[in-house]
Image (cartoon, rainbow, N blue to C red; front, side, top):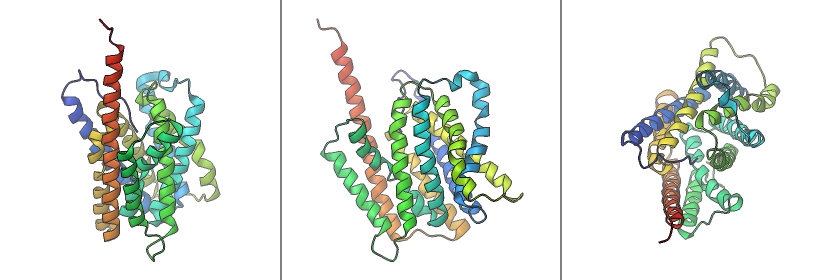
Length: 309
């Protein structure tokens, strides 16, 4: 997701604040992944996804109270519905993968999303991708193959579900490039969170069972963490470039791997570590390359727009 970078005139403290916001968002998302795994012992991941959306929508109400009904104003509501439908599918698949894969592996595969974003940008946005970025995409998919290991005993269908979630997440990222040009972050967060509730409900109804009373606080925490993570992530990317913040977002994998080891006695195997390193390296290069090209494009437009004497 690429939101406008901080203006050159912004104070130096803003990038530092963006780093803090990004790290906080990774803690929220990482903690949410752990809670999903715990809740999946009692509930189907589809129901967990709906309840996360429901309580997350309630958690987003303060944004509406702070900014008023203007927060809901957009002239692209149809685009939001399509975008959120894809996001809901990504969430359902992602929650299912977290419930059925080692946590570190599920999160590592989610980082393949930028690879799909690059391909989608060529197909849908008409962006020109040169040899270096294509090389990074190819390297990233090699990393995915290392993690998934098709044809071996380590291959599972859940890995493909995690990749499908990353593919849908990439499509959502591309859509946000359109939305962020005109809508403020709070509008994106509120509308997305609210639309996920009805969009995730049909899948939940098919597997519904009432959660136990002792599980309810955990489900509420899921919603709070999901909305808080999205809010922090969105605002961090408004203050600084995605390429600058990417290394901090990758801390989520380390955080989740540590919690998975402490709580579930899960240790990432060497293939996941090697593959994740390749995927993250490729994704980081793509983010840096896109940021550099964006700066060059802005500079070129400024020069071309200056009056000739």
